[in-house]
Amino acid sequence: MQFAKCPSCGSDINVGSQSRMGQMFTCPACGEVSEIVWLDPVELDWPLDDDFAGDDEDETDELLEEPGEWNDEGYSEDE
Ligand SMILES: [Zn+2]
Image 1 (cartoon, rainbow, N blue to C red):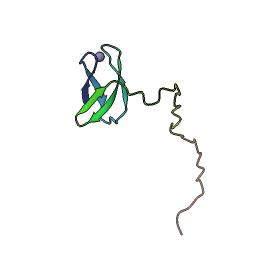
Image 2: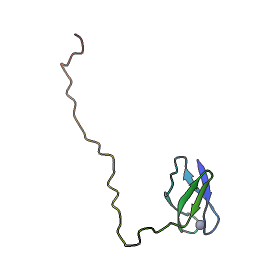
Image 3: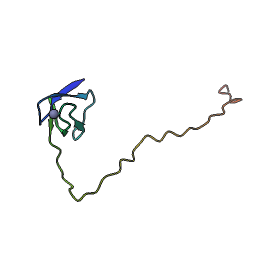
Image 4: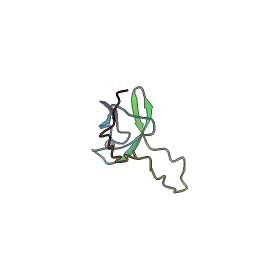
């Protein structure tokens, strides 16, 4: 678990143990949103708006867990 300082108020924000560049965090103390700009040590800064055209990326890379039902009764691995 790692902590980084809020660029706004200087509070320690828990960024977890698997922080990535560009990951966004909301400061629990002041409510400002900041982004990880460096990883070693973890550093938070204001989010960079590289695309300010107003397009919101839909993050649709959810894990697609298909509830596949395996009816392997009667299946024999013995040969
Ligand atoms: Zn803050």
